[in-house]
Image (cartoon, rainbow, N blue to C red; front, side, top):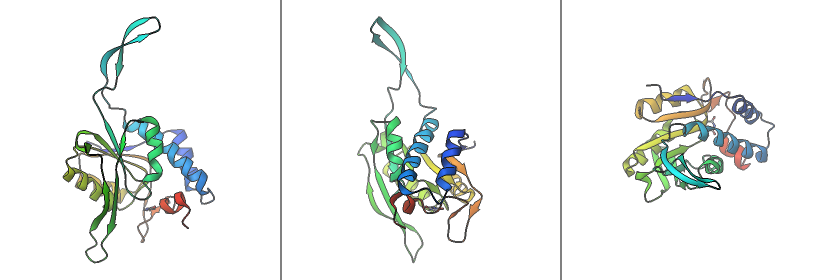
Length: 209
Ligand code: URA
């Protein structure tokens, strides 16, 4: 089963190209990240089942289909994942938002959780982990492991740009997790940045460089 979904759409491609441009400032960058997150969310929710029900139109009762038996959670990986949350909430306004922060221990090189606040009913929700850049995949893989340990069974990973190395890591560690990406780039450089990528997503979102 191929779990990698590269979303091919002119609007997304155009917006990703604007994000790559180093001259795109933080305000526009933030808006574009939200817009692309909304478009990725649209694709990543394509398989949600609909239930038969009825509504009263002004002219009488009619049979309709609605999403009735799913609840959702959005979990941004701190800090850049926060930039995607509002774009996701635009399509899923009732979703609960959890946060997870991980850093790499300089000695063991293992990811360590430094912050985690999840919805109490996260295990019964479909969880969308969001992080703009899937680079080595180490952080995303640890976040997925953490959510699984918490009891979450239904997880999707959404990013703006992925690298082959990160996709491989997720597919090896979590073969059932589907990855939705707006662009799939060539490789990582020696510092773990995606090439050509868009630079440091967190710095560009929050203007910290
Ligand atoms: N994180 C980023 O923000 N950018 C990259 O290219 C890789 C990881």
